Amino acid sequence: MDTTQLLKGVLDVAVLAVVAQEDGYGYDVVRRLRTAGLEGVGDASVYGTLRRLYAGGSLTSYVVPSDEGPHRKYYGITPRGREELGAQRQTWAGFADTMTALLAEPGSSSGKTVPLAGRRWANASEGN
Image 1 (spheres, rainbow, N blue to C red):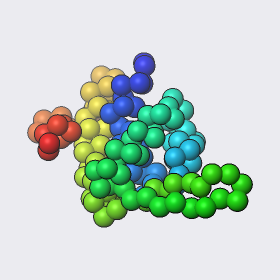
Image 2: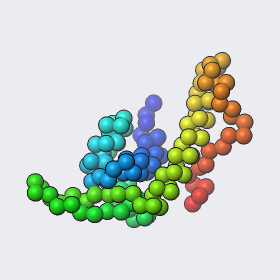
Image 3: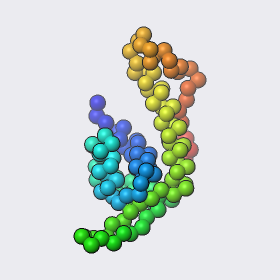
């Protein structure tokens, strides 16, 4: 399965989750995402996401001088970003449960334990 489109859909929340753990500069965020298992994430995609989340008020930034090279722009999560991350965690949990149930082999225990009836996950466009 080509995960490119999946990655595009979750990059904002993945970046928020990484920065919520610890502030980081651009390439540090890329490295941490790749270490976490998102090996296919592109540098430019992450840098664009950082800029967009910063412009939207979900991240803050500050510059840290470096003796070994150019200064680094670090990003930290704002209270608004934490709220957004919390909402996205809930959305993801519901969506993941639904997909797990849909993809379960017929007769498997995972297919029986997650009821689909009445389950609804929020589409990202609904709140906009």
